[in-house]
Image (cartoon, rainbow, N blue to C red; front, side):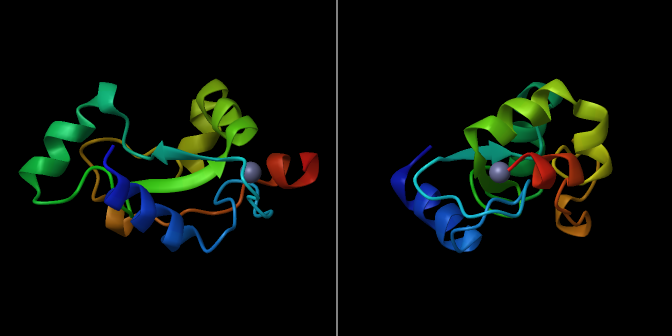
Length: 103
Ligand SMILES: [Zn+2]
């Protein structure tokens, strides 16, 4: 991921974790809502989108990132994992209640 795309993603977060809704501090990692392994990178390129920029990317805590990948069904319900065939810009993200409580 190049530093410009990383900066754009961080600026977009405004310092808040997209998964739990709490402040990021310096604990943020970049999450790709459309997973590479699901054809996301190829699909984004085909759609003329930047795979490494919002709305495909978001900054979340490392612990929230781990949780998302451990709970893919819940992550899909809340828009943090989007199938490669969907239009990611049409899929809103919501704070995940389980993570909000845990923070
Ligand atoms: Zn978080």
